[in-house]
Length: 94
Image (cartoon, rainbow, N blue to C red):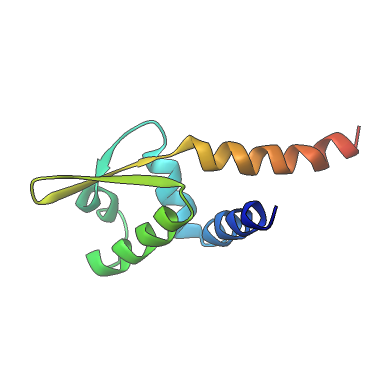
């Protein structure tokens, strides 16, 4: 139970930042390189990498390396866990 709670804290903490929410939205269903992810933001690659590390720690994204490039995609497992948690509150209102 404590581990589940810590995972939820990590997920919701990650999603508290609008840039991270936008990154997650952009990699949902598509794999992008870190440079492709960084393109629309007025941030350095290092700043984008920090955002990605936070998302990865929360298990919201998966990174893989191909040569010198890193590719990122959303990981639905953590999102499903958060959705199940929120469903409890949705069901209370019915």
